[in-house]
Image (cartoon, rainbow, N blue to C red; front, side):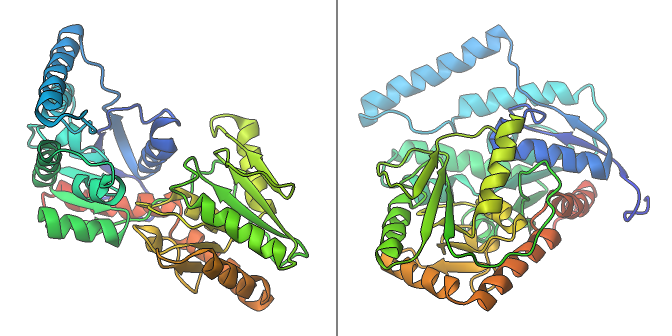
Amino acid sequence: MKNQNSLKSNLRIGFITALDPEDKRSWSGIYYRMYQSLNEQFEEVNALGPIRLNLVETVRMNLSILLFKVYHFFRYGSKVKSIHLSARSKAYSRFFERKLEYLNIDVLFAPVASLEIAYLRTNIPICYFSDTTFGQLWSYYHDEEGISSLVKKLGNRIEQLAIDNSTSQVFSSEWAAQYAVDFYGANSVFVTQLGANMDHDLSFNPRSLKDQINLLFIGVDWNRKGGTIVYQTFKSLLDKGYKVSLNVCGCIPPNEHPNMKVIPFLDKNVEEDVKRMRQLYEEADIYFMPTRAETYGIVFCEAAAFGLPVVSTNTGGVSSIVEDGKTGFLLPHYAVYNDYVEIIERLISNEELYIELSLNARRKFESQLNWSSWGKETRMILEHTAKGLTR
């Protein structure tokens, strides 16, 4: 084996994704970051996606899915709210089986790919990565919408098959990892933290509090990301006499205010938008997103890269990124806006505390929340997986 500290591994990696990992739009750019990071660690990384089924396969898969949806509607009186269906999973698996016939691969890396590997027949060791699992995702995000017992059963079966078919399972948080162990019996589990999705050199200038405090909120779903609490907190701070502004990026809030600036959308594939995003982080003093549900949250990694203290919620995988009292503050899910007002007041009235949290956040980015660190950790896991070892 080559010297891991200086040379690339000679293991041949197969990168399994339904989408194109070289497209920065795939899974918010995470596939792209993973693919690039693994290329820095291994001599050979083969992108096996995107999936392109031929006409016959496409018609057969879509017809099977259509018949199932019709049956489901008449049986349960509702639409199918899931893509975790056996017909799709089997079609994906057959596609990758054909691809693997012509490649020499030592280990497969399958990020968020339960559909792709559940029915995959291969002797190549598989490392399955995800930020959550089907059962956890639906109980956490979608229980209020309701899905049928049949869809739950099918989704959980695909997830179970994916975990059983993999040699190792990697998750982005202890929260997700523990659920996989408890619910699916995952037995070779690792945890690796994802990095900030930023292209540019993330130099850092130490922060200090300014006369006017700029709060930053980035999120597509105003309600699920806690936007209502953000606006109530922002208004209350103003009413108390604090000089506060609020930048909102990624959505259009239902409220307007002269101290609130709204940037509806920025595309990280567009250079000017990337610069604008970086400017938002640089101009902010606190990253404030009291999310109602979050499996991970790449934005928290990006906030850490800019040394931004975070104020958020202790839910899902957030605590794997934000350390309560060290890089920010995490309040319980039941906390209301007055609780957030109190914690922000504490932060902006104590510059020593603010600077300490800011420096800790940046240190965490440099040591953990970056793609270089992720690549090195994943390299060790893949080398372990290639030997066919369970933890």
